[in-house]
Length: 626
Ligand code: ADP
Ligand code: MG
Image 1 (cartoon, helix red, strand yellow):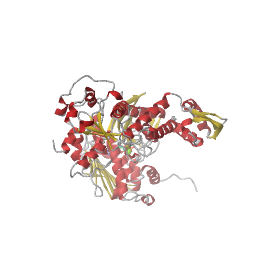
Image 2 (cartoon, protein in one colour; image 1 turned 120 degrees about the vertical axis):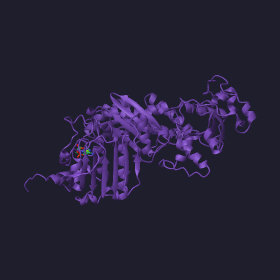
Image 3 (cartoon, rainbow, N blue to C red; image 1 turned 30 degrees about the horizontal axis):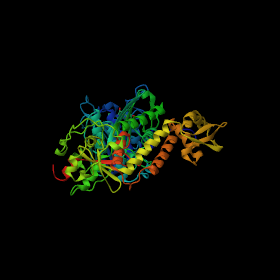
């Protein structure tokens, strides 16, 4: 066969194979176009999961009549200006509209601010229809009917209306988070309407948009991130560990406002939470990276969801460091959902609390929990003396100090019932009420410490809390000096691709600090002579290969560190106070003080809260006193 040039339609259909995978990809491209056109309102309507109809309407700049035919021509774009290294718009390839038009029936109706009427153009399976006058307001409406009618093979891969509809919702939500000042609606015969009213571009506005998308509980159960390293700025919110999910679908990441699904970012999030979440739990995160467009490549795949950073190690380090620092700064915090769920369970006639579900239906008691909403923030002082019972003690004396010393804390066994006993409280006990976790009052069911602060009741899971404390202590010991290692009787020789061997050798010093003695063993091999003692009998081959992969991906050796931390966690689990052990008052108070002093102690090693707090005001509400 002679060599021939492919027809324009064939070329577009081949491109569509990459860019337009399913209805949601069409929605993504059309919404991105609307945003690039400066829209402040974007409306999406679908029918039949998007296969019958997708219509996106915006109030953006519009397309001049004489440019309509260019908009649907391949490699025609108004966006890319001169430099591929300086991309600031969502689109730049000039291939979405011609690709979509080659596999569906597409029409574009548009009107610019200057134009005195609208015009319309159509393209069906690649066949261009003539431009004709139309009636429309300023902006653009793109309508896509019968998607994939021209490529039936692709149609066979569609997963059914519901799956396609939900993929479309996800796409709209994902983009909407990056554009809080734009109003989005998503409607259609085959779905319930999603409405995201415009907020604004301030950090608060951004968080309000995030709450619209992720549920109203998220802000109260998250920590703000704001960090900068070498010109790369990271902002956003991450959930506190006890507000985790069973999958990573609720992790949203943006690079210069572009939604991305990036392995490096996902890995960094996992690394940041490795300490506080088991492998099968995932944080909820919204992270925005902004950096010079010249040091990130967005032109990796036609769908533009992949990016390559010039310095992946920097980005990973920034994310891991910023999240860990923010968690440490936030001090111990526990999910409000735990307390909210408990209150709901108590509340007469309340619907059972649906943990982790959408915010819908929680609105009734949302307000009630606002006060306790932010969990424990040590920087927040108790707001006001709540009850007459404490009045006499208010400001009774300066802080006593020495709370770490168990002997000093008074324990008042009678406090739960007896007013007399309360009157006998020492100053030390009074000062304890001003601490974050309060004064221990009792232990119930041999595992739960009931404590009292000035304005709340705190219940601590003693086993979970102690396990966490032991773990943190072990980890500190682990990372403050070289990790003890054991010599292998025979060095283990591992054959690897030369690049991997080289990479491992380059990191040999760091690895040695973690107890892994590794060196070059001729071309394409390394020899392992020592392994961390804590690992015991371990699959050295697998460990080294995992490390090589990780260094290739991220330029770090987190894997080893994570494994050692994991072992520390297991050891902590075995070495900690079992539930069922009776604790003396001093022991309980000492545990509470130690928790306050230990970052990350609001969550156990399995991602569950170690304590919950019920605000007195909420308890009073339960009893109808307010
Ligand atoms: P790209 O977005 O990469 O430029 P597209 O094929 O998606 O390529 O769109 C081609 C061109 O059509 C855009 O560059 C833009 O000028 C114009 N266009 C598409 N959609 C809109 C819209 N909603 N509003 C204004 N102009 C649009
Ligand atoms: Mg585009």
